[in-house]
Image (tube, rainbow, N blue to C red):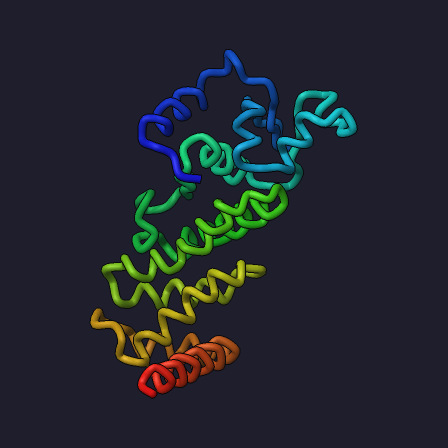
Amino acid sequence: MSLSNDALLELGKLRHDHTLADFTIASSSGEEWRVHKLILRLHSDVLYRMSTSAEFIECQRGRVVIQEVDDRCIEAMVDFFYAGESKLSVESEEKGRVDKYTDEGLREYLGLRRDLFQLAHMYNVKAIQDDVVHSTAFWLGQAADPHFAVRLASTMIDVEDLPEGMWEGLIDYCARHMRGEETEPYDVEGMLEVFERRPQLAVAVLRRIAEKNEADKEDDV
């Protein structure tokens, strides 16, 4: 869904104005977010139906309690509903710059992004799922430090149940560099160490290179 800047500004105001809020999203920790059913309708057919259909206990009680999900992920989802983006952050060296995170902070950040993807999948919020997936390619493309891709890849292989699309971003990044499509520095030795730890990643990259090479041959015919 694409909205004008003025519309996003007004939605941002509505996010913190609970006068007309008519539903509550709560976490199992007790944190609560007052929301508007109309906003839910724009983003999540699942949440909207739960909030408006009398057959659901959530509608009868006027609240849904999301179990066993980090409060930061729920808040990020609510932020996305009103602003079209979320500023999910972790306590690390510098918020907003993923390539500056400590290894521990990066691992936590990736875990939160995975959990946000799963939360969005649960409530059918595809825009958030897409945002999480595209973030990997963005991080790889924006990192000033050529060794950051190695740190990111090394951390990714230690985080369980990452969305497939995040892996695809890493596979494409490695394949582009190994094919000589990119000009920025690439830590070959560091990435080879990652491949040794996770041979399946190396196989996927080689397969992607073969597919690209085959596509190039067909284009030349």
